[in-house]
Length: 210
Image (cartoon, rainbow, N blue to C red; front, side):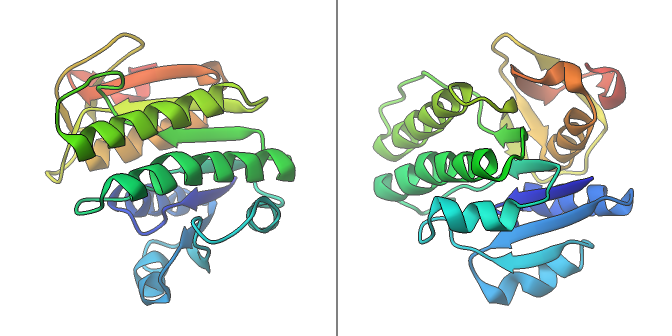
């Protein structure tokens, strides 16, 4: 499998790249800063300079050409304001999906977030939730073999390999390592296409969670 990852220097993306490359997949990771190339290469992936806030659909499609699957794992990140929640968490996701569609890459996994639809009163966090929700809606309208993954609160602790995966709302947390494990498992399962999953830590091994 040739997997192309948007947001390739993110913590989940690096873990996905390491898992995928480790099992023999070809991985291309898009990053916006050439200083991050060595971190990407250390996972076994190949870095490509591509800022999704500064390119067009044709440029994204060119990067995705010949791939088997696309993963959107980008995010504006902590410290970013309302404007970048929209330009990264919504617009970049839509652009990456449009690029996949133009390149004929039908398999598309989007990392979203739990809590979509909530209003918390925190302007920036509410903008983040709204942007992720809009990105989901954009993806659902495309003729792609998409899967949306909504992890709970993200932890940097070691993965356990044990999760709860459901198509109904969940509340809880999950290590980024287990999110990465679930992403790799999703890519191998055609039955997960056009489904939206919530993910938290649990008691079920990832390989049995589907």
